[in-house]
Each structure stands twice: as structure tokens, then as C-alpha cells.
Image (tube, rainbow, N blue to C red; front, top):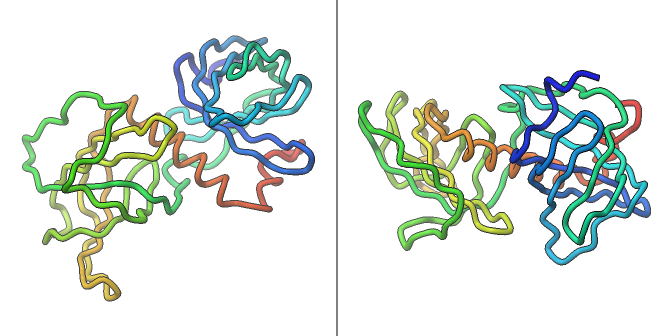
Length: 230
């Protein structure tokens, strides 16, 4: 079995499992990644994790692709960590920038010039008073949101978002405006921007968050994701 596309240590992943006929979507961080065993610490929100022997599908990014790996729970190490045994090869899915979801985030933006340098990595934080909570169209490569600014296609903006993860995560990005138009319902400008600079760790946080929300929103169709024949 090739491990070239295995999740890597310290990578954020999404996991999908079924218990008693109900699908559950989990978020976690890889602690150990070996061909015969992967240890993942999951965000539990106080809920018990599935037990030994349950099947669980890992979904993670690699380059510009989405990958899936079917596993079985070999051991419950403690209340939040699982040792997973791979059941087959890693399979390739859609391009990860095409995976998108409408999610509620705190967001702000400001115009910047071509020489603007992205600030250092930010993995946790809280929104400031000038940030706005709204439903954004979020993907691994960009975001669509309402703005009070006056932007044109090609403008550069500095975008900050706080994602409602278990520990709120701040994502900082420089982005190029690819569409800007009047939103009739709100009377404000709606922007669609493409990330041109994004810290890789922030990107992992963002991708994992979008994965999780995307599959949660699949609802009853989520069985297709974890079907043994996929």
C-alpha cells in the first residue's frame, strides 16, 4: 500500500462514520501516520467516540486534491484518541477547491496594495468589534461574502475570518476580487475573492472546516461518502 498520499502528522482531517444507522461527522488532528496504523485526536464536544471495530472514513487534503481512506477502529486510546487501521488504499476524490459550503463565520476585509505582506500564522482568536457575522460561501480557494466596501475586479483585499471550531480559529488571507456586484436583497456589495496568499496551516484549518460542514450538510446523502464500494 502506498503511503504517498496518507494524511501527515499534525494534519487536520475530517472523519465520517455510521453508528446505529446514523452518520456522524468528526474533526480531528493526526498524531501518528503510519502505513499500518494512524492515531487521531478528535474534537468530541463531550460526545463519546465510536467504539473498537467501527468503520470510519478519513477525508483530507493533499496538494489540490481531496483524498479518502477507509479505516477500522483498532483501539480507543482514551476519550479523544483513536488508533485506526487502514482497510485499503487511499482513493482520490474531487479537487479540494471545488468542495464548498455555506457557513456562518465572523469576517472582515480591507483593501491592500500589491506589496502587502501577510501577517504571521494565526490559529486561534476571537472576532473584534468591527467584524461581522454572516453566511459566507467558503471553499479552500476563496470566499464569497457581503461587504460595505467599494471594490472592483482585480483589487486585492486582506480577509480575516474566525471559524466556529471547538477552539475558534482565525484564518488570515490575501485575496483577489474576482467578482463584485450589488446584492439586491441587502443593498450592499457582494464579493467573490480568490486566495492568493494563505498560510499552509491556516489552509489546513480552513479545508478541514469546509470538509466537515460540507458533509454535515449532505444529510441523508452522506451514506454515499462511506459506502464500502466508494
